[in-house]
Amino acid sequence: MKKENIQEFRRNLRHVEREVDRQLKAETNCCGVTLAQCHVLIELGECETLTLAALARRLCLDASTLSRTVDLLVKAKLVNRVTNPTNRRSVALSLTAKGRTKVNRLNQDCNAYYGRMLHGLPEQKKVLLLDGIKLVAGFFRQRQNDSCCSQQATGLASKGEDHGRS
Image 1 (cartoon, rainbow, N blue to C red):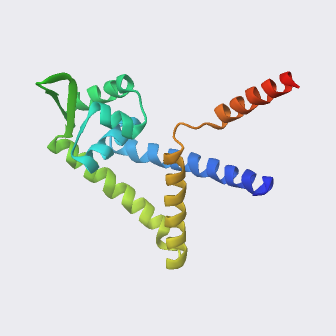
Image 2 (cartoon, rainbow, N blue to C red):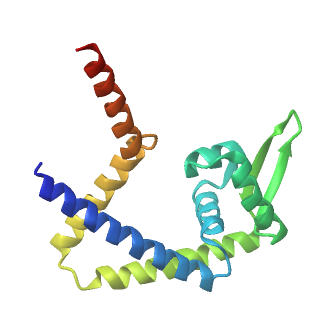
Image 3 (cartoon, helix red, strand yellow):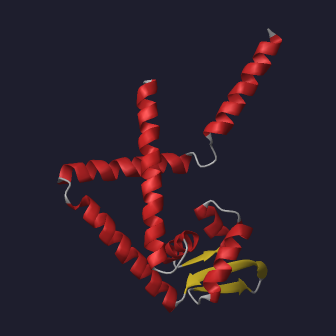
């Protein structure tokens, strides 16, 4: 792929990232939760019950960082936390009735917003857009632990070692 095409891809991706971030913050603020809390609630809404460790893996977060967010959701009576009696380090998380109501509202608001966004697109372009988003999301999921910085640093270290041998 040409360097110009990669630059354009990155520029468009940054724009999408900023707009999605702005929209997510606006949506979650009107529902009275932070963006981090929203992610936890949505995941629990999709999975019914998750351990803290499984939720941390799904969200690519450290369990101790996530634990603080979960604590606030438990205090707000949006999430139930049940310690496994046979393994006290294992904690099961699920939504309360109030939490399910909050998730339903978040989903309805977000679905309405994105539905309005897609409304004017011809069906063919909607399919292309949805397929493209799915492809980009899959790309990022497969490469979660990669970083352009770590790749570059690794490449530079290898080149430096090679040059030292010449």
